Image: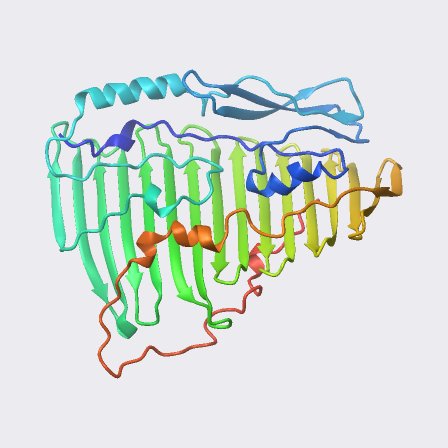
Amino acid sequence: MVASSRGFTTQLELKLSTLFISYGLAPSKKKRMCFPCDPLTILSRISCCCSEPVVPVRRGSGSGKSNEKVEDWRFDSKKSPHRVRVQASSAMPFASAQSRFTSKQEKFYSRCTPRNSGPQSRDTPPKRDTGIANEKDWGISLLNESVNESGTNEDGSTWYQESGEDLGENGHRCRWTRMGGKSHDGSSEWKETWWEKSDWSGYKELGVEKSGRNAEGDSWWETWQEVLHQDEWSNLARIERSAQKEAKSGSENAGWHEKWWEKYDAKGWTEKGAHKYGRLNEQSWWEKWGEHYDGSGSVLKWTDKWAETELGTKWGDKWEEKFFAGIGSRQGETWHVSPSGERWSRKWGEEHFGNGKVHKYGKSTTGESWDIVVDEETYYESEPHYGWADVVGDSSQLLSIQPRERPPGVYPPLDFGSSPRPGDDQSDKPPTSAS
């Protein structure tokens, strides 16, 4: 039989975010520059002047066959009236049942091996904080002919596979393949769609959408896109990649959603960012970050993270940096709000003059302050670690898409008002969190 129901017994993976809380001073420069690339890996604590003896406790442990950590946020009472601490502890049950997941997988595969031509499901819950995959990781393989077939496996589960081609104006062509399956009782289901698009303007697109649910009620959805087009303002070739992922628990009020994007042009202009959200029962958290490189040495980076509980406790951390030619600034804020509304915050800033001198300043609601000039080397990244040359090298399938043959004398229409000028998109600008 076909292993088309591979996702039916998959345990939904839901990991909690680790919220970085600084001491109010700038983190070390090298760690800070890499922070947007992996923004949930640093954990420390904040001090506050609140009278609520609330201690958020982050619980984390590795599962039996994996070194990945599963995290939980709990709140315990302590007798320290002026400090909020984040501590590591043990695993939560929803995401850490790795041994049960492994046994279910082994049991499933031992009795389910491919025996006919039906599609084999690859649909498993997406993993958090994995960014945007390269096209080779998807293994997109579109059929060259129209197909419409279905079947039933030995265990009663069903599958289907369809493929076709849609044509439109301006040479538009979309080749697609859809596949999916259900368990015998309909309690589990998976779907996956692949496509490639092109037209006479040079536009090319490669994409995937997949979703699934299992018998435990867990559900997930993921989409990925890669686009090549000519920017209408700069007339430069541009490649854009994006991904959205989400998962929901069938047994708890728990779930998460992520949106990632990357944009590149042939002169080195680069934009990257992500928006993230998660929830576990009474606790929720958010994170947004962005990176902007103009291709001429100017760079802007920012991060904004915050979390809250239904009891009213809120806390967060945000920072921003701007640099060009060794001159620039950094600034940030760490804050905390108690259930009674009492607020603590610490703000900090740095001015880099490009001559080895750095002006550091800051203050907090507890009355502390500083304002000094120090001798310190300025470190920042003026170019992205992954840029135009890298994305071109990883987009061979996108670039190889063949458009329809254009008849002689037919030219694509030009519309210079259909897309915003680079930098006009407000969705990736540094937000102001509700602090």
